[in-house]
Amino acid sequence: MADLMKKFKGEGKKKKIVLIGSLVALVAMFLPWVNVKYYFFADISYTSNGWNGVGTLTGLASLAIIIFWVLSTLEVKIPSEIKEELVEKAASILMIFGSGYAFLNLIFNDINLVGIGLYIALVASGVVVYGVFKNGIKVAVIEAKKNEIVAKKEEDKK
Image 1 (cartoon, rainbow, N blue to C red):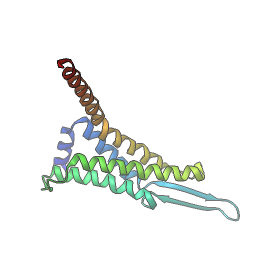
Image 2: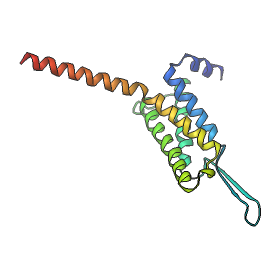
Image 3: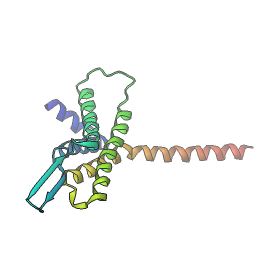
């Protein structure tokens, strides 16, 4: 465990954002995502956590990010075809889809149904998506500018 903490402290800012967001989303899976209360004939209350329905995608995806990091930290041999960046991108998209779909589904029924766990999972999923794609957007913009400059230089040579 101490080895994992040392490795975590040595990680870059982007990786820390992704791992902390994934851990927070995983914890939020156990908090109430749905709160239903009826006061008609009797006081009936029902809550459900994120492991029911499409929210499961958020939990499994956050778990995948954490497990993949732990395995790579412990130097477990992972097939070369599985790239960490690809796992993070796919998992972050699944996280935001799972929590976002559950949120939209509930608010179109009644905003009072949404539990605190869903709010936390939605924000944590957004943080993970930001952490994963933050540098990717910058790289794409830089590449586009480089291509534009190269195209202008070739045009000027003609």
